[in-house]
Amino acid sequence: MIKLLLAPGPGAAADIVPWPDEAAAGYCLRLNLDPSQIAIHVPDGPDGEQLLAAFLRKLSQHAGLLAAVLEPKSGTGWVGGMPDKL
Image (cartoon, rainbow, N blue to C red; front, side, top):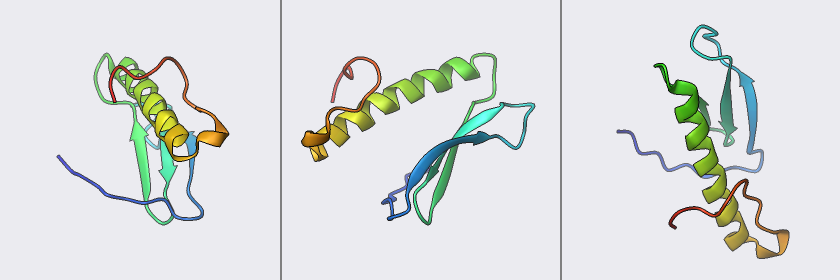
C-alpha cells in the first residue's frame, strides 16, 4: 500500500482524459494537483468498470461533503445520497 499526502496548488483541477492503454479502459480520472498528478483508471478484471464506478460515487460523496464543511456557503456539491459513514 502506498500512502500519499498531497495538497492542491493554485492550478489544481480534475478532468477526464483518454487512458493510454485503450485495451484496458477508454478513459481515466486525472487529478492535477499542481504540481503532482494522479490518474485513476479502470482496474483489470471482468468487474473493473463497476468497481471504478462504485469508487467514484463514494469519492464524490465524501469530497462533496468535505467541501460543504470547508465552505458551507457554497452548498453541498456531492452527487448521490449521503455517505454511509463519515
